[in-house]
Length: 175
Length: 101
Image 1 (cartoon, each protein chain N blue to C red):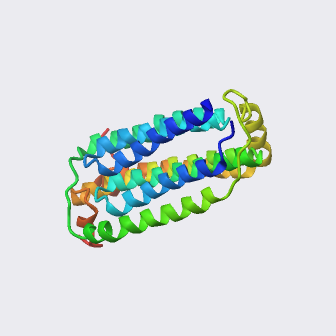
Image 2 (image 1 turned 90 degrees about the vertical axis):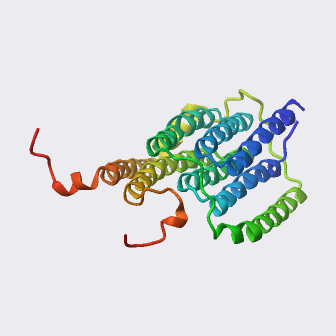
Image 3 (image 1 turned 180 degrees about the vertical axis):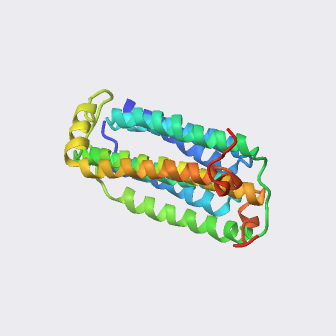
């Protein structure tokens, strides 16, 4: 029973944060509500017994990626978003369509009676040791490939975000 | 007390749909980018839920790969946003509709 209450509590926070991301017009409010979504999702991961994923969710998503977003918002001094034409049709047709689609999917899913095994908090099912064995043994090649991907992403970010004239001028001579 | 798998899937579906909605109706390019992160988070939740359901730990490993790809995407995407802002001086996607300045 406690499990269900915790699931509903954090799920409600999660959905409220996601809806708040949509209705806020200032990007920094959207970013902060996205952090709320990620934190409550990590609590859901804990309920599922995936403790290491929950920790990484807080560290990587709420800690690293969202800080990147916040720094960009502050760097560009992004203000309130301005409403322009073109979004009206998407709002009028897209929102009811998306809601109908969600209700259909939820109705189909809830119609089936499949239950997860009861996983208690701290059952250490997704322990770091087991995940490390899987990650560094079975998934070693994808792991190495993602490291190359990260390296390419770093270089791409540096090249893209550097000033265009500095890139065109080449290595600077005056030291 | 068992929580049905479908509850988790419905929650992840709601998150994904919120991301799709934000992608459609938001005009600020940074908020659109955050909507993509929201969609990735919804997919991650269904990965973990299925991993718990089938007792397959590889579902959780896939979550790490999704996170790595999301981090790489955020770094490159935000760099592109900075480059776009530098040339157009706007963050509104409706004003970034010309290939040539």
